[in-house]
Length: 105
Image 1 (cartoon, rainbow, N blue to C red):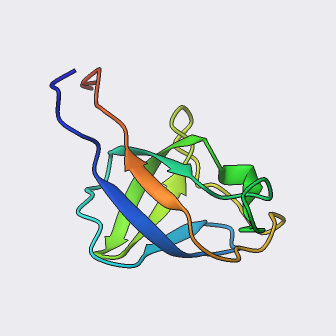
Image 2 (image 1 turned 30 degrees about the horizontal axis):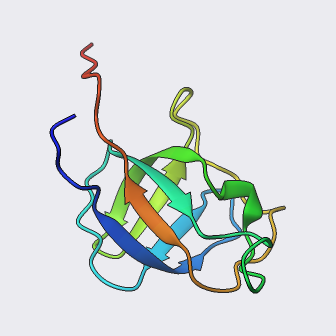
């Protein structure tokens, strides 16, 4: 670890789509290929926030704008299909995961 704090962005929306898209309240600063963990979602919070299926999981991301990114499986790199997930209600955080390995092909 470099001692650098993980960058965090607040979530303002999560789509129910074949390609699950996360929208942040402000510019997130992420780049395609980074890994993030989503937190503070689900139904065990003081009030229902939805999308418990993605809470606490690490994802590979594909950035599609300064405030949105798509979630991908970090192993298969398949897009996360959230069409049958709980509806997003509010809040949540994105947390940048430290890069441990650098893969080359």
